[in-house]
Amino acid sequence: MSALHSEIPLEKDERGRDIVLSAKDVTVAFGSKVVLDKLNLDIYRGEILGFVGASGAGKSVLLRTVLRLLPRRSGKIEILGEDYDKLDEQDRNRLDMRLGVLFQQGALFSSLTVRENIQVPMREYLDLPQDMMDELALMKIRMVGLAADAADKYPSELSGGMIKRAALARALALDPDLVFLDEPTSGLDPIGAAEFDELIAKLRDTLGLTVYMVTHDLDSLFSVCDRIAVLGQKRVLVEGTVEDMLACDDPWVQAYFKGKRARSIVPRDDIREHTDDNGAGAHSREK
Ligand SMILES: Nc1ncnc2c1ncn2[C@@H]1O[C@H](COP(=O)(O)OP(=O)(O)OP(=O)(O)O)[C@@H](O)[C@H]1O
Ligand SMILES: [Mg+2]
Image (cartoon, rainbow, N blue to C red; front, side, top):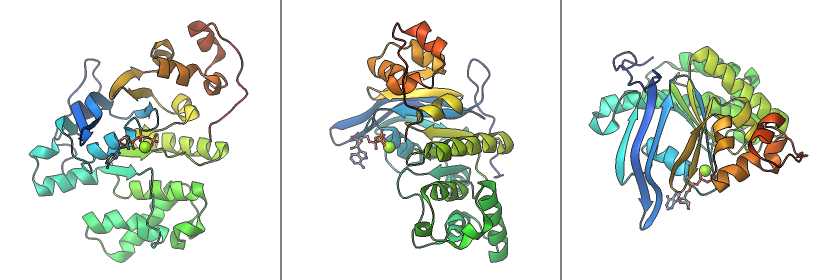
């Protein structure tokens, strides 16, 4: 737990939910190409937010902007009650330590073992003796459901699912409050993906994490996410429950949540309620 942890009382929304991340009127552009245009989004403490949108819509760009890996043209972002722009170097580091990230690409350093990968953030931010870092790394490895002998393996020796778990262990290395996951279940088989979702839900429950999860995976959205936000037309088009998605008349949202793939997952009654097409889809989990 960082020194900042209890210092800043979080702002609440009108329903009394603690806002752990707030993006207000955020605009991001590359040259003349505007990717995000005055986007607004709040994330509440303890929730798993599923962030969805067409490929190329700007989901990863938003994530990178929030993490200050990309500059924004305008707008304001507050994380855990803090505005990076107003912090000095030391407080920025303390805030960074409270965030864990699993990137869409390059989840792990290929030249480092799992143990060494998990210790990268520890080395960057903490000054701990090696044996303590080894113990902590092992704890994280167990926490994400990997066997202890995964510690000495290199990423090339791991399956896709094991890599995702190891990357999650690294995201959890500093006991963050808020975790960003960019497509954590992509490339996993349906069972592996479902297990990963369960793991995320369990970690949220036991560690009190708040999870921001970019995903294309309808099963994840329906089974593990408390709330869904859809990125489209350079902003958050709609946010809310699965019900809210089904009731939204945006064509992309309709196609996504009521399309063929969705029909095998959304409770049949819900679809009937919102469409007159009740054909059954044959597909199960998206790969
Ligand atoms: N560093 C960059 N420089 C220029 N353009 C960029 C850069 N990063 C992203 N883009 C562009 O921004 C747009 C949004 O990209 P982004 O990676 O955020 O999409 P995405 O919603 O994450 O898609 P996917 O679901 O395929 O991961 C794309 O048109 C992409 O080409
Ligand atoms: Mg992306």
